[in-house]
Image (cartoon, rainbow, N blue to C red; front, side):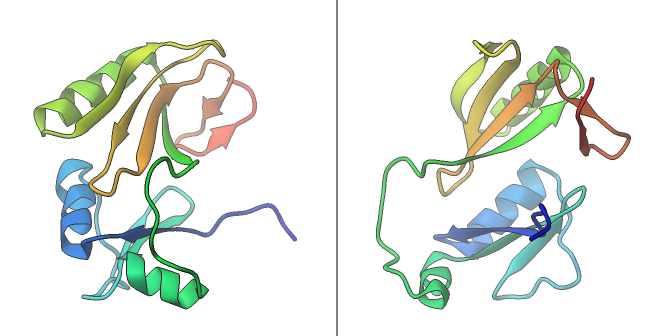
Length: 142
């Protein structure tokens, strides 16, 4: 199997609320494939999809109940520490839940965490050991 991710699918409690968060707070655009049942956002090389949590669980044939830490996070890497701070200032002004303010971290980077309406964690980070190309894809050496 080739190492790739094509879609990250998030099961959400309220599709309209979550779609509005990604459109209005993050400023992302819906793709033409989106409809009243599912939302797609084109990221640099993959899609983020939002789908009702109960329908996603039904599709996977699993129980939709559960709470607490989800044991994963999504990450948005930046080119500078200052960009992390700028993003946090913007998100905080829009009422986004700040889970952890940006700070120097043990692995040598600078990061903080926010939560979307479904408590999915987004790490906003500067990693001095990981570069980004012109469209934001990671490259091994900074």
